[in-house]
Length: 149
Image (tube, rainbow, N blue to C red; front, side, top):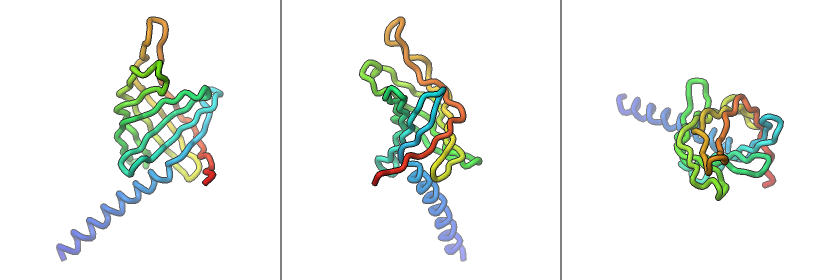
């Protein structure tokens, strides 16, 4: 009986993990929305099951990529991404590496979700009058782009 309970418990844990993994796969793709009247894209690319990259692409085609992060879920069934390393794609800002911030994905459905981005580091100064930062984003509604595959 004890062995049966252990096997049953392991099956439940595996099912729970697999369910979260499938949700992450459904998130993969390109999502679009508007921030302060400007279009923005949010890409979720799964390189391997344990490696997911998140990128913001603004209307000027500038890319802000989260390179390293920890992904968890909370009691509200939100995906919480703790940013460990992020940067802009421009060579001009290659020395601007951000190491803090939180990205939260909530109300996740097949074709829409809500996104919040908080405190992605301070402004990174290239020279005394040239700086770059990734501002906070609050309650951005995103819709998933249809795949042409």
